[in-house]
Length: 151
Image (cartoon, rainbow, N blue to C red):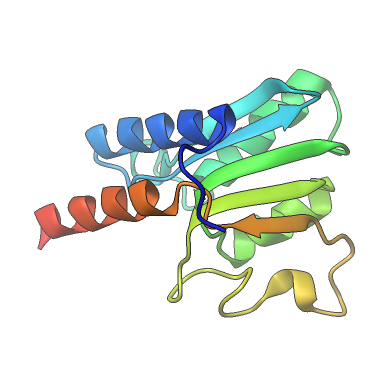
């Protein structure tokens, strides 16, 4: 489902991905929205924070949970520029995110439509609605450019 221009939350996630790249982080950004209002956002901070769990989704989910005062993000939407990995998909499920929108697919590390396919497992307690390809071209180009500079 590639649509351009993407909605405002995905545009913001793309801006956050650019900030991540400028900081030397893998360019992934994420935004959590509830009732049309941003309640959490973030970009990758794994290198900055020396924290392997500081993926953009985790940073945004933590911020949203703190802002809402609840570990359950019921009724929230998560916009992220890259297909979530198994860790992030698990957190999305545990947080009860209602809808996941992501940009670029990740055949190597993704776990939504690739790899582990976390939401399709019998053990998955909550399955969000999933929409892929939102802002896919720009998200993929940010990643390609980032890794091309490092090769």
